[in-house]
Length: 119
Image (tube, rainbow, N blue to C red; front, top):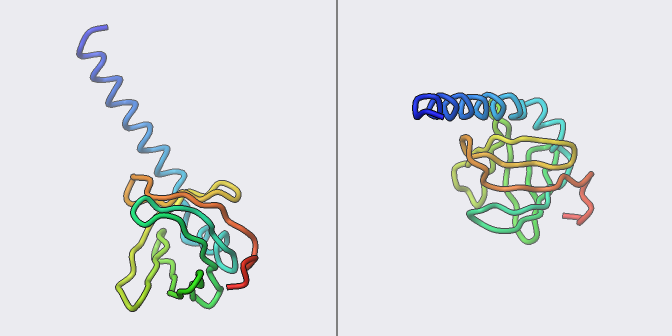
């Protein structure tokens, strides 16, 4: 295969992957429907493991801490300890969620119905 054809195939594959990722990012409505009133148990690359209940009133309850969540456009935003919110896009597939910073996977989790940990 010549270098020109190889470069073209790489560009096409990258464009296809970008288009596929853009199609699978959850909308704001899908984020609310999947997460409000439920718990996510998972891990973030930057901060490690977490289990959080996302109450329908916008509060976050975890083991020994609280925060606030909101949906801004197609991102879910989280604010803890009075700090400004950090926002992530998400891909949701059934009970699985992948948190995205731009197009980069930054964490994963499993959506559990309700508040099974009693936070």
